[in-house]
Amino acid sequence: MPETIFITGGTGYIGSRLIKEIQEKKSYSIKALVRKGSEHKLPSGCELVYGDALKAETYKDQITPATTFVHLIGVPHPSPSKKALFKSIDGVSVQEAAKAARFAGVKHFVYLSVSQFPSKIMKDYQEVRANGEKLLVETGLKCSFMRPWYVLGPGHRWPIILFPIYGLMSLFPSTKTQVREQGLVSIKQMIDALVYAIENPPSNQSRVYTVPAIRSSKNVQITFSRAMKV
Image 1: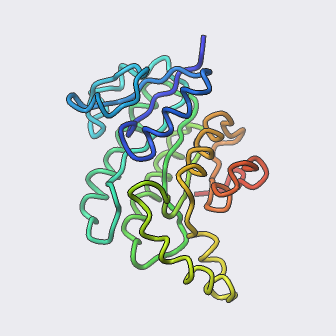
Image 2: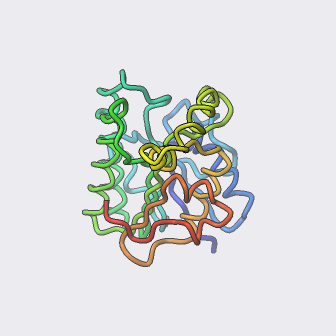
Image 3: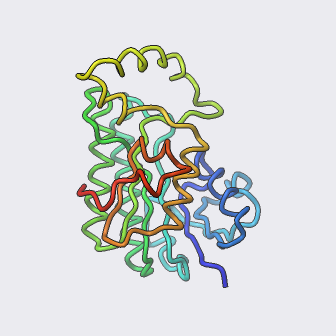
């Protein structure tokens, strides 16, 4: 029997693409959390689980027999003006997902976080995601934390105009680290890294995939950060 993966946020920008990529491998079955009325946004072939991502009790009984929980819920197009939404959606959803995952006894939790390199502009977003990581570590589950900064793809291409600035900043020691940790990744690199994380649970409690690791998805087994503290 194929292993089962439970996914939240499967109708979104990253989630829908991840599901299609997993389905092509034909080695997993997928359960996807969805709200009634949004079924058409999910790729076909998923087992639908109706529930509210902000209320664990609406779906925790339907996760089994999944052994991996992939949490992709978040506010679309994050910006500094969405501080309240980060707390009420991103923050609450990961709290509820942690409860649901523990209740269902999953073995591996994959969490789409964000780069933790200091940023004054997006500090509220980073704080919520960092708290999510901390909460998940405290559950005792084996966790894979994905930390991109911005994922380029259809409808998400405006940062391309920053390429010259990134190039200039990479020349100076004072900003070189920031460019590395807050660089841009493509949607393909993001999906490849997520698939790798799903297929390779950490041997220790947690593993962090930073921007360089996500970019090097073809060779991610060499470049990821092993069992980093969060």
